[in-house]
Amino acid sequence: MKNFMDQDFLLTTETARKLFHDYAEKMPIIDYHCHISPKEICDDKKFKNLTEAWLYGDHYKWRLMRSYGIDEKYITGKSTDYEKFLSYVKAVETAIGNPLYHWTHLELQRYFGINEVINEKNAPVIWEKANKIFESGLSVRQIIKKSNVKAICTTDDPADSLEYHLKLQEDKTFDVKVLPAFRPDKALGINKPTFTEWVKTLEKASKKNIASYDEFLDALKSRIEFFHSVGCRVSDHALDYVPYLEASKEEVASIFKKALNGETITHEEETKYRTATMQFLGKNYAKLNWAMELHINAFRDNNGDMFKKLGPDTGFDSINDSNVTYPLSKLLSSLEVENLLPKTILYSLNPNDNYVLGTLLGCFQGSGVLGKIQLGAAWWFNDNKDGMIEQMKALANLGLFSSFLGMLTDSRSFLSYTRHEYFRRILCELIGNWTENGEIPNDMDLLGKITEDICYNNAKNYFEMKI
Image 1 (cartoon, helix red, strand yellow):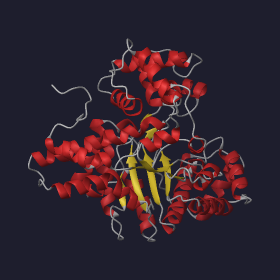
Image 2 (tube, helix red, strand yellow):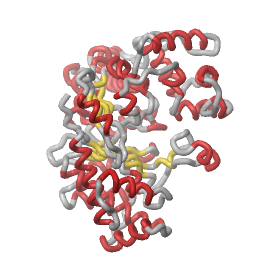
Image 3 (tube, rainbow, N blue to C red):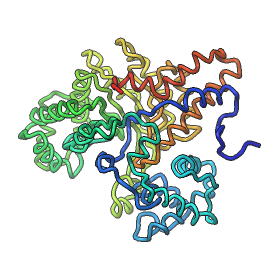
Image 4 (cartoon, rainbow, N blue to C red):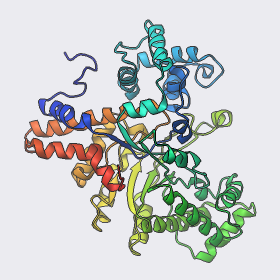
């Protein structure tokens, strides 16, 4: 019987162990999609305790605690941090099979030197040990450096000033690249009650009057150019469904005007507007050689009562099952026909879409770019052992596995970099099994290079990062 989460955790073959310890383990990290705060990096935030680092804003953990029946008071309510910590320990102690069980222990091991199995009995000792590490000076920047991170792409609204990215670029004491990523979800949310207010925010940021659709697009273009000047090379879109419904520019302009006037927008009108705006954005990304990330098929804010109480991103989202193939094919093709399809990374929260995306991306490859259209890493509810394996197997079966961009955290927690280690162990186990089954040659030079490329080099080259 193997020891629990020892140095060969998840590595069951000699080839897997060699690939991880000799190749994957040493590779730096490019975290090309996350939700951490550039301000907290700039300020080099120090956490007052483990709860602040672990549980503030982490809806993965909140969902687990609710499944255990823990009262909301001890999750997002006004209980003490220690009470929240103890409540999480109660939930995670028996959460075998959930990736949080592994992530929690990896974080304790890597950042705090705590190798005990977490449970209610030793919770007070773990609390004390971890908090002493924070008191000794473990800060956000130290966590990033300790994790061997070379570049981070945050998630930023088009109207953001990017002031903290600019300050970090001037800070010669911190050599990790912290780059913005352009996230124009609010620009596409024409049916949201906050849309007109956001347009006013965009006006201020762009210093452009917006009274028409043309002026709106001009303002967005100016923000894209500003983001580019600050080092942005990737956009990101949360698409609960993929829009595709062609309309004339005059019709789209009329729809935009209706929204500014506070009139109701139908779903058909919303789809026409989103299609035209996505096409405009995609063409501008292509001109600047950006990559475009499309996150598809999340169904958000299912619990209306809790949404009223807590707002979005609080653990009440699920997988969606909207149709993907037709609208996504048409959207990509409408850009390709003008030779303005940007590098694109496709994610779906619905694992049933792996083969849809895996076959569709093969229709738009080429243009001298290795893996121009990517099947993104197993995302959100799929970033577990089974989900990662199935995503990688789908890519290998349908495309060029060796061009894969590898893992990202997609996290709001600075302790989440261990997810890269978790992924790398699973990656090496997969390749190791293929090797020892005689399915691929035992050529360690080849396999080691492919492993290193997936862990780091492919992302470095794809985003053209000078690091």
